[in-house]
Amino acid sequence: MATNFLVHEKIWFDKFKYDDAERRFYEQMNGPVAGVSRQENGASVILRDIARARENIQKSLAGSSGPGASSSPSGDHSELVVRIASLEVENQSLRGVVQELQQAVSKLEARLNVLEKSSPAHRATAPQTQHVSPMRQVEPPTKKPATPAEDDEDDDIDLFGSDNEEEDKEAAQLREERLRQYAEKKAKKPVLVAKSSILLDVKPWDDETDMAQLESCVRSIQLDGLVWGASKLVPVGYGIRKLQIQCVVEDDRVGTDLLEEEITKFEEHVQSVDIAAFNKI
Image (tube, rainbow, N blue to C red; front, side, top):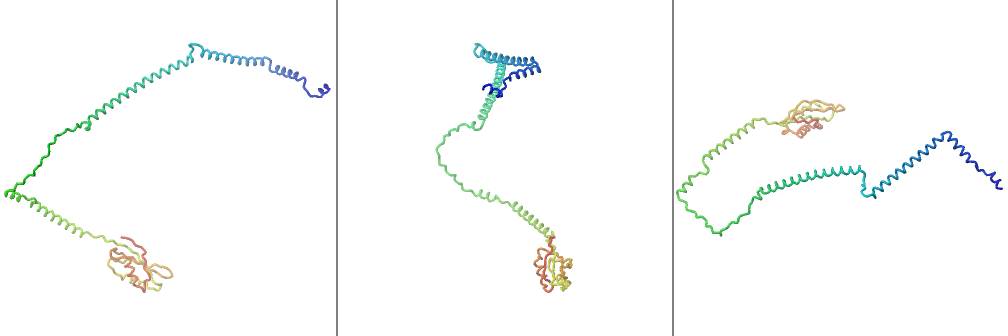
């Protein structure tokens, strides 16, 4: 039963043979020497690392436990000495700077003391006590009666001299003369009159209105400060034409309302009056 079971079971009993054959094949292809040298090189590297680690451990143990052993290598010790020397030099320079600052501060204090002593507030001395004598009643001075000679002298003194009066009269006359000359000059100077140029549109009732008669009616208006100018007929539409007439007026004498009122009095010919243009001259 067991043999029959093993016959039917798929087990690779001679696998080691194939493994040996495969190893020998690769050794023949690569050479047995290369494999051995590679193993030796790996082993030598591991041994060197182990020896180096042991040496480092022994050095550290000797430095921590041995008497008189230095805690740092010689390179670190020299660097520390150099740094200490540089710090000492820097310390000396800082001390020199501090001494200079102290001297400067002391000089400033001395100058301030001198200035304070020389100021007026310090110069002022303590007020001296004065002995005040008891108050005595002072009698008012008696007036002496004026003598007749002194009265005559007072009368001779003229506080407002006659010379000043004459000067005042001359100054007044000169001022009046100058005012009169200024008034004459101002009267001779021409006065500027404000004028305006007006363009009027006079519209008739219809196309049957006699425009010549309408224009004559408008020009018949005569006022102070009114001057009529050129005129023309301008078509409006449907055969109707309007009268456009120019005039110049003085602003203080003739106004636009007055012109419109005078022109619209001709009710038979004039329907309305409009101001087309208004310009100051």
